[in-house]
Image (cartoon, rainbow, N blue to C red; front, top):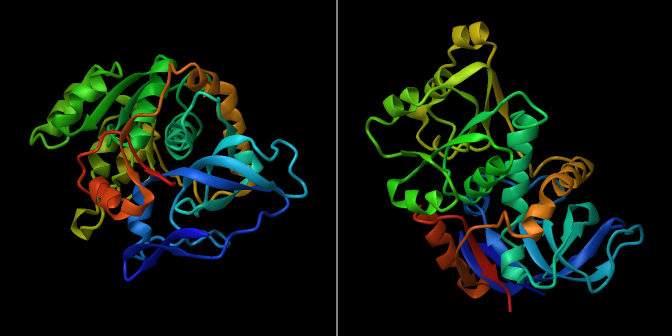
Length: 324
């Protein structure tokens, strides 16, 4: 099969061995995949795949099931699916656990479907399970950093459907796009008075942070028993930005700092999370009252241009790679 190989940090569309599905896996003929920040970091050698995962980039894909493992019961050959992956999406074929797949409606394009798995599952598990937001939790007010990202735009929409008040932080040039999602409280991440504005906006029950800096400020914005959920360390390339923890504030206000990743969780844990997500939100995706925000689409042959576009920090939502 053809797939993207990384050679001297260059993306090369070349021949690589085709994968074989394990007992609970399906083999998918990939028609579209998506670029995630993790891909940009992995290609530099700073983010290794979990043990046993494909070394090919790509954490989600959409396409057609062409082979099933011996113990697969939920899917059949010919099904149109999107899938959450531990790797391997930048390829003509990829294996996925059956519990990590979503049957997609016939009127969805593969481009559209590929924009859903990674960002919506990441947003869901960290908002509602780690962050304890919404009907099942006691938190009702959230602050989202990098709110115009794929995860951010998914998180904003999920919060809207749970009637959770949201503060969104992103570049001012992206504010109009987020207003289109119904977001009212917006902050410019480049504003020199950002933290003054944040503190004036009131306290939050949880904060979703993919950046990993400004821990002291984030904690100062939390209500008692609030939760800071850190899902990435994009801001810590500069080690001078690392901070000492304000342990006194943590103790007095009974705050929680939660580190969270999705990729390295077990197949069984991810399948259980996806099952709960389907029960809670899949119907809203099917009727398109919730939808992935797609910034742009590139051919897999132009994956390098796609990576450069994501790295430019000008995108709103997802960047997709179509595979002919």
